[in-house]
Length: 217
Image 1: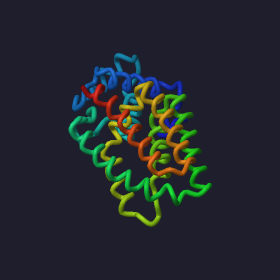
Image 2: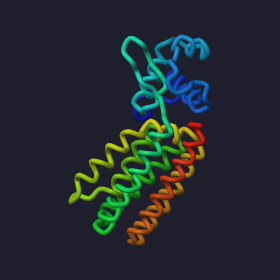
Image 3: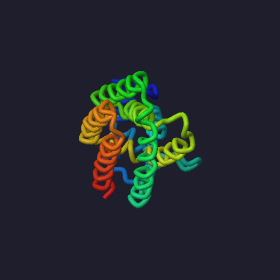
Image 4: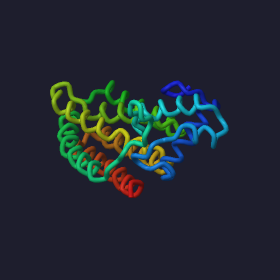
């Protein structure tokens, strides 16, 4: 069972996979209303599994529900993404330089466990699970108990781009690149060099941004 309770092999899972493909392929465009009846008819299912799939996508940030109007594909703007990623670069460098010298073996094991969970989710194609594990990985790297305000800002910026991140993980190359980037980040952390960690985080963020530029274009 996936993170949000859709059993693999059910009609709801089938509807979820179809809707994800339609969003990534551009068949459903940002800000476009999703016509549930048409989706259900095209899949040969009732409206109930389509609604269940849409609830999952809403929790992932890929669709937005508007009362009395229905579900819409979340509107994504490249300008917003680039601004937020620029802010993340500044704040996450500060966070990493504060946190890396303080990481003990327990913290390193939590980071490595989150990285393994990302791999498992990527192989399963479970976007929701990968989003959760990826967030756990990065926050374990960056969080320092002595600097709560820095992490508060990091969380605000991450929350603002979760829908973009879901789009990134829907692409197989995004999942592959993320796994490889995490391996390099873990190696840099094990080396104990905050500067190397910052460079790997910047490269990881840069690759994601470049891919999202292509998707959003």
